[in-house]
Amino acid sequence: MTGLLEIRNLSKSFDTTKVINDFSMEVVEGTICCLVGPNGAGKTTTMDLITGRIKPTSGQILFATDDITARHEHLIARAGIGRKFQVPAVLRDMSVRQNLEVAYSRQTNPFRNLFKFRKEGLKEKLDEVATLAGLTDRLKERAGILSHGETQWLEIGMVLMQEPRLLLMDEPIAGMTESEIEKTTQIFKDLRQSATLLVVEHDMGFVRNIADVVVVMHMGSLLAQGSIQEIEADRRVRDVYLGEQEAA
Amino acid sequence: MGNLYHNKIAQWIVYVVFFAALTIIPMTVSDSFLLNQLATYGVYGMLALSISLCWGFGGILNLGQGIAFGLGAYGMAMTMQMQSQSESNPIPPFMLNNSLDHLPLLWQPFQSTAVGLVLAVAVPTLFCAAFGGIMFRARVSGPFFAIMTLAMLSAFYTIILDRQAYTGGVNGLTPPSSFVFAGVEVDPYSPTAYWVVLCLLAGATFVAKLITQSSFGLVTQAIRDDSERVRFLGYSVAGYETVIYTVSGLIAALAGCCWVMLVQYVSPAQLDVGFSLSMVIWAAIGGRHSLLGSILGAFIIQGAQSYLGDAFLATWLLILGGFFIVVVRFLPNGLASLVESGLGLFDRQRPTSSPAPDGGRPMPAE
Image 1: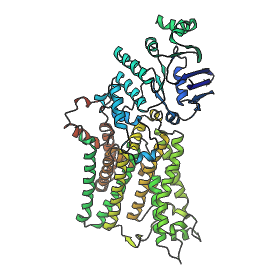
Image 2 (image 1 turned 180 degrees about the vertical axis):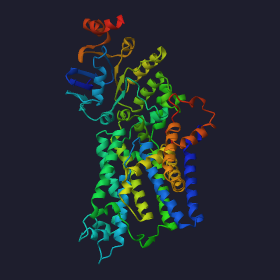
Image 3 (image 1 turned 90 degrees about the vertical axis):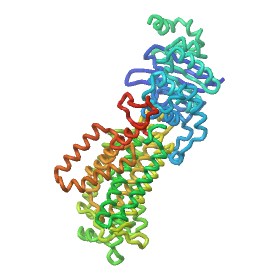
Image 4 (image 1 turned 180 degrees about the horizontal axis):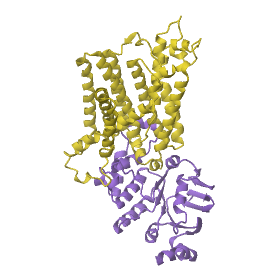
């Protein structure tokens, strides 16, 4: 088993503040890795660094042994990394169907797309994802009028349309009901057959259900890494994160 | 069935009917001055179309469309000017007045009509590709890009005004005779000139319409909505923006060529900031999200200016300004959105889709 995603000695400073400090981790292909940690630990910043939204001060990010450090966002996405944002980012002025269609980005060349009016395999994929996301009846609606839960589903659907090898999910179940969370759990477990997931999530119940590996971040560094049992037994993790959460 | 306004087949039918109606005009209008005037409206329609494509569909507000229009117009004027020069008399009179004793290198390619025409279209298009490429790669967008286009427009205006020996300065160029192409003289007051403009307007509109309906058009609409998000789907936002900005510039350059063919005149006034702003106003009033709406916006405003403008003189600008304010305030998507909401009344099968929380902006399918 090799790491599909490898982060080596990553650091990021904003002015004099070190947000990510010599952080290393590895995501093994075909697993679900959960990234947890208190607010401000640098989880979303790590996602930003992986997807190229911001450039690291130092360190390396390897995807499928390919160095993707500081590449442009669209090139990283094309390499096979899809991302769902913490604040769901869908195209609010477009219909649900158009959102999914745009996300089906097999052909990204602007000149070829000028002459493309029909995308091969789109219909099947769209039906499949819309069914999975429970949006079949909402395809014609404008994405801006969806409820928060539906918006979350739409963005997950968009990431699935991209057919990435690695899915980055930033707080995917925020604002979902119990039954929706259950459904997400099932979908994520199914996804593991064909893809690899890196999930940032605060809900430890959800993490317990899906995680193969848990990585705990604190103050921009790696605090602990291991199975959920190991993490929950770890005294340091209890001190900085889990204890605080139970108190809350 | 949904709102008929968003039905692609219905849209195509309306477009075909619209251009079919325009083909009848030369058969009914015998006044050649009126025909020439209507043809210039076609040029304005092309400009509004180019703005609609770039701004309405690509989300790129371009206040300097006069650059592409002006460069195209100057290229065409230079070509027509050289058509009136002969072997024995190769230097245009205004250059002699500026004591130039040889034809400048800049002008030499325009001695050939074919090369001149190609340059008149290619130079502005390539300029847009280069300028747009640099700006969009640097992620200059929104109002910042609009300001850059404005600055660039002013720079061109100043250069053309300043280089009198090469450009005719403030007087511009006035080619003495009609444009001749492949042995055919295109008299600006003849139906032929009208047909040329109409064909180019119709051709540009159909191409633009196809672009908006292609996968490319879907991506540009997504970029307009949230360019940041689209990057993470794997699309090069700068690439898409550059292409749509360049196509828009190409249409404006063609409009510039047609314009000089019709009026046999070009001056720095065609690169005036006010003229570029009026192109944006046509699209805004007609409805920038609709290609046809923008074209009609140009027809309505310019038509009203020609006929009401004479009657009201200085008051006309106040009327136009007031009208613009009313449209922006009550119809932010222009007159085309009236048609959209009108047709929406017949659409009873989608009760949930009506008033959206943020004021019911239309779906950008059109």
